[in-house]
Figure 1 (cartoon, one colour):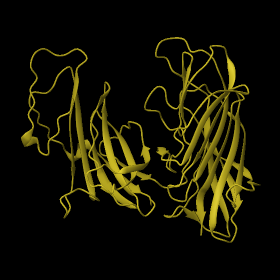
Figure 2 (tube, one colour; figure 1 turned 90 degrees about the horizontal axis):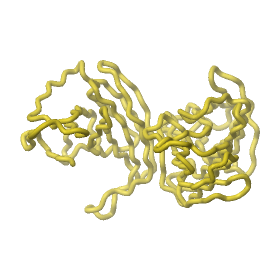
Figure 3 (cartoon, rainbow, N blue to C red; figure 1 turned 120 degrees about the vertical axis):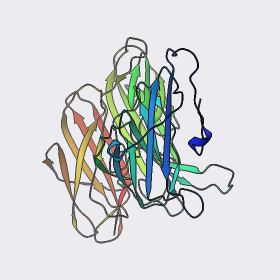
Figure 4 (cartoon, rainbow, N blue to C red; figure 1 turned 60 degrees about the horizontal axis):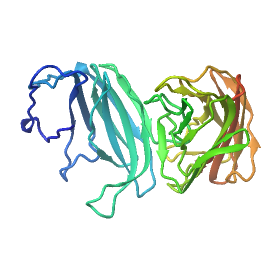
Length: 385
């Protein structure tokens, strides 16, 4: 149950009776600068405060929040197609499993904001939705993309810098919010919930698509398929077997990452126990080149693309045994192998951009020490200009 008010003057609380077993509550407030239109769109600053309570609802509430209690988030938001805008949210998360609501802040893209979050006993889950205003003012906006981050503990007095919605956009496997994410098995059911449109900073991302297919094969036999982007729920026989997971999307949300394809192979067998989720040994290949504000790189030059293999957290350990990267300048019709060199825990791919403006598409294949594989393709990963 939630109670909302525009001012604490309109809201009172009282706990009646004994403490409740399994009962939790929270109180939160979020503050922004009101604009000329009486809303908080494009506020230059934002404050988010929350506190959780176990077994009770506070009888009255008073909180003196000091600057030393806050962490500072300096957030920058990348560009979006001309008819879309951002909706920024900061959701509180407190132990044990106490959540809270968030104000929706309309945000022009590109943009930036300084956000202050209460950092004593609370974590925060930032989110940025890319939306289109509804033609009917009584209706909610249409959401085209969602970028989010799992509950994060920020330290009071510290300053954090983060960028959102800057490319390249593609598959990623950041820290999970729920046990079943991202590819897992419980009993004899395999759950797929792959975020195929994460941003360059590593936030998980989903997108509206034009066409989508998610399919699971056992050996060469189709187990099942869905018309959802990176999502499926498949019943399996208990015996250990080799599986192949395929995803294929097309989309027209702007001109970047217009196609995503991925193929993963891995073994799986029955997982004993109730509500036990075993995360499967899947990985993604992430590209993090330095792009300009338009998600573009210079044409006619040699260019370095940092590459990393991101393994699903909680999956059986494994090391990368092989990795290849290919580049295309004609939307994936032809491919050129990119030389790779090691760089710390990752690699760097070297490419030579053609002179003409256009797009760069990227493809990568990796195999780990357990024989698990991934091949993924992103068409229009970034622009050339």
